[in-house]
Image 1 (tube, rainbow, N blue to C red):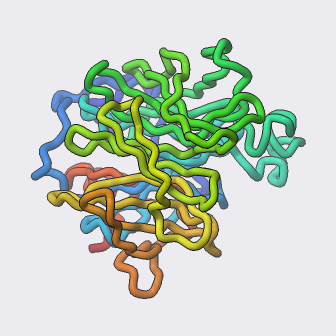
Image 2 (spheres, one colour):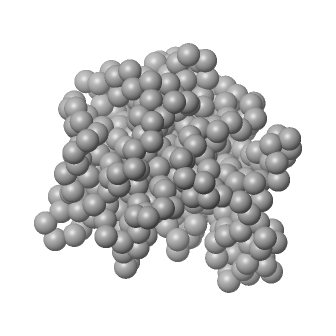
Image 3 (cartoon, helix red, strand yellow):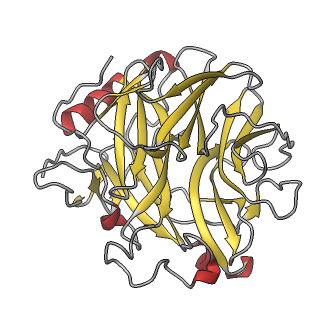
Length: 368
């Protein structure tokens, strides 16, 4: 197992076991301390992109990098960088999200859920709880924090146990994190439901260590049509506006867009479908191309066979250019050494951070 010692690490790092003998994985540590340069990098210092995703085949976390925002290469040769079995109560994770905080720490969150656990002998029932809790019912989220992208703290969080007054929740899915400048707190927003009811999006505030949620769930957005589930929220701040993309289980299905001047309230419903897909998709996430005013809307096209990620570009959040899917004929988006990525997120990183990942995982270069 490869290991590097950095000033950010306090205490003994606990190595995660690898999916393939000899494969390199990230390190779990009991505690991390802030680095001296605890400020986010300037725009001019951003030089690459980090794509975090999972695959149904292993229910684990993967990293891929790119220096141009079009061609992505898995840093670990297609192997997971974190095994779901090592960090999750259900021995599998889904829906990873990553962001950089104002303290220059990296915050990663994901769903504690394995949808094939019965088939793989990890439990005797289809789901963690009785069927009346609905499809994929689970109880937990996973929160992780790092200052170097290699060493991570790790916490399992059960919103229903933390806040029993909220109700008997039937799911805790697709957590994402954004910094709330008014409260100077990290806001974690996710999909949930009361037992087997309609899915909806809520938010809570996390503690600074990113090991628990401190406030009870509150509604993030209310869909105007009763009985319609909404899932997979993604919020991006652009100027003084917050753009929420989400999935509506409506007709037509697919992705929707709402805008507010507040981070967790006031999102205005727009009925228009924004994705170009003719088959089902979910998990929208938005990232900006470095040094430009062009934003990429990325989504999991789970209706494709095999599943794939789709991409559209926008500058005004009104019109969108369809870039196609990874490795489709005519698409500029390329996945060079991996297939089947699902429900992920993309974040800009510096040249030094890219080099650190490449060195740790064996010097595999990103593709230009």
